[in-house]
Length: 193
Image (tube, rainbow, N blue to C red; front, side):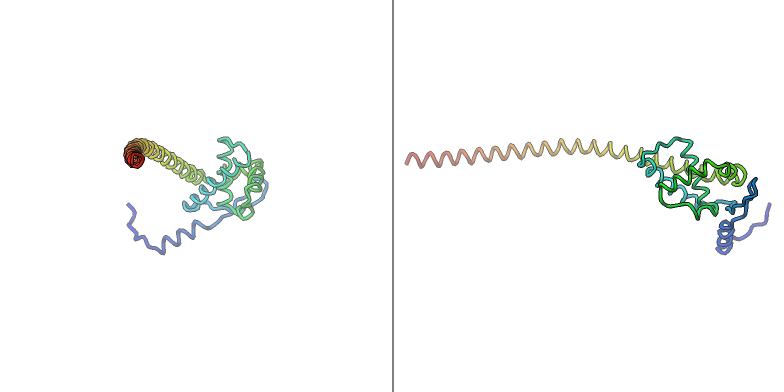
């Protein structure tokens, strides 16, 4: 068993610095690209948040997205966040789609996914994405249950309110009838005199 070592803030800071270091990868044609061999979880979370923000915008542009494109777009964002190509990727959604399509259509994309990035690191993205999807689905189920309960309460409250309204209406009608009778009596008494 390894000797126990005390974890310090200094060690954590150094570890984070190490995660930010990029190393060069050489492609089959001799081109090179610097990338992060290890993905920071906080950066993976940023990537997923951008994905969640971008997909509805892409759909709003009338672009149909299938599962394959969703996965490719997720990997495109991995390239954005974990390589120096990220400096060149636009924030404008239309331009970003064009850049994504160009990259997906190139041999470099598949070489990055297969040869450059460690598969365990890519799985970090998939795992966190799945956890976020499951959490969102669970939140949606809870929201639906809350809405159903609120609807039931609303119906019960509606019945109570309608009943109270009916009572007020009956009292108002009774009071109005009494006032009319009194007025009729007063008018009748005046006519008689």
